[in-house]
Image 1 (cartoon, rainbow over the protein chains, first blue to last red):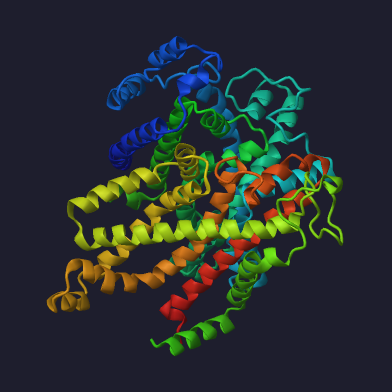
Image 2 (tube, rainbow over the protein chains, first blue to last red):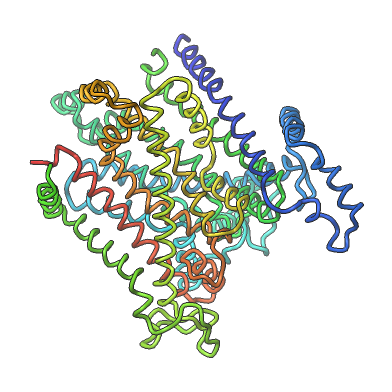
Length: 343
Length: 283
């Protein structure tokens, strides 16, 4: 109970201290979007033939005829009431658009993180158990290579190999191929929704679309995860309690998995949190390559069409997720390591 | 350490670290290719030759031709100049500005330090690539704006780094001595503190160069910044992306390879530099 209270206090402090940064993000984004070139009112008027009156009306409707501080005040009030404005390109409220598209991005990012962790932890452990050997060097080489290939290149090369050459990957556009009916939406994660609906065929179709973009992202974030696993495993393996365990005659696998890995997992958790939030924002490129209908692609399209509201909403969403993930990592950290909450 | 001793030490480290030596050679080759390569290729990077469009690599066109019949190798080599220039300018800019701001904050502390810290926190709460995207869109689709955007998203790291490094040295005896002998605060930071921080920042710069190249190419890939027909690796990959599903791999693979080798080289050099500056390596 005292432990939980400690964690709650820690989480509360963190949340409070991140509020100024979040407010800063809102103001910064707002100012940035307002200095964007081009008049959105002209852009969204019916066409070049639009009359001066129509543009004037649109400008008034969008609040663009007020001074910047007044616009900012309106914007802050809107955010406070949960209204993120309306996208001019889709004609829908930004919040609705984001809610529709966020599951696509989350599904992709979670899968990528899952793949990356599934590869990075065994690799890092193997490297830490055999430092200085060929295995260690091979892991380091793979990691170094992973961060050097930009995602938009590795994604395209994966498409070339698995779609064009091997012919085993589906057409690399969207979340599910056009011949398969998407499942009824419950969680928004197509694979899970299909399984819940008992539609194995749709689940397989969605999974096939998901594998390549997720692998592309996983490849890029392999390095920080594997490196951290290796470093933290090495540190733990050198500590006294491992030596004691060995001296007591515990089996090698028990020492590695139960005692070493569990203690080495904490720094990996922190990095995984950072990697997750970075991926969510940085997957613009992957979403673009695979025509993935996620939030990043949505924000990019809006940006190129000088549609302000979706970009602001997107950046705010990303910053909030960033704060929340960090908070979650802190809480998990507190649960896993009693010393953190007690401090 | 005298210049000769420094060179000797560098050689010693390179001899013990073959990877860094290879990276140094690779870096030299890449930069040379970017500087004099365009003079050596037979083809012009922007002149189209539709009769020979989309040809696979051959003896005449070592890296094939693109959809307008332009030689891919000539374009990859020409793009190197631009990409390296963008990355170098961006990193240089954020290094100079970051070192001065961070140095001042670390030395002075107080209210200015706190406010700069706040702004840095706000910048770091952004998804950085998205911030760069928005900035290029706001400033206009031009090459120099890629430089500014890349410099700004790098800035927080330099400010933090310089601030921390200066702050730990602020109380050192030699800083007091410099102050006692009549040097003003500006002179102490610029003449005494920053030169001491410089070696550690060199590692950061090298690692950052690779990242800046990826960032610039990524921005061009999504259609921000450099515009066609200018040869640039990100644009070349974006144009080649349309042809990957019909099997024209060379349009993506060669600019991709150039990007990969450049980033690899800067990352390895950064690691090597760290080994070189780490006192524990000096025996």
